[in-house]
Image (cartoon, rainbow, N blue to C red):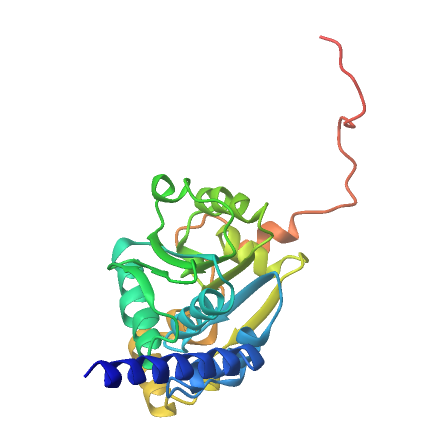
Length: 270
């Protein structure tokens, strides 16, 4: 009946308001209310106000899950916000959106309803949007005033693409969160991790994840060998196999004490 439908709508709004209030009070509740137990490092990321965050995580540690939670938190709590989820490939973009963002949103019983919804994006009735994109420069340059930029598998996103997306945060002063398992001592993600730049850095190895058993890790070590095991499960930036010189040797050859042959202030007449 009409009365029953109206009562159901009112009840739904009340439940949605309760979810929003609880998430606003404690952002980690966005996972708890969906029936998921957040690990301590996930709670740290969700509660953080850091403008730039690097998450260095083992395979299967739950980094994509926390990425989805961050995206929904921004969309639900800030009206008219724009969140971009950037993944290296179209397939990964689709999986992140469908298998993580939508599932979490549905588990929360859609506290704010959608205006539009597709395989890679959603628009909420509060004006907020979540858009999942593959790592192709031509598909993302049209976006601006981004409130939250999440780069998944960031170690596999090229330097040129990373440099092209950072300006999207200039006007909005939005948050940048990069999540990844290591992929060699190369690229912007590795350089940012070892730099002295102002990043929130969170590291989670496989042995710190309660869902990954010791017996599984022992088998993986035997199957993968030490080098790949260290990279995939211990968050170790390993030297690339095709490098002519080792990363440590290159760093050892550099010195701030050597004076330049031609000082930059010197003008040479030709």
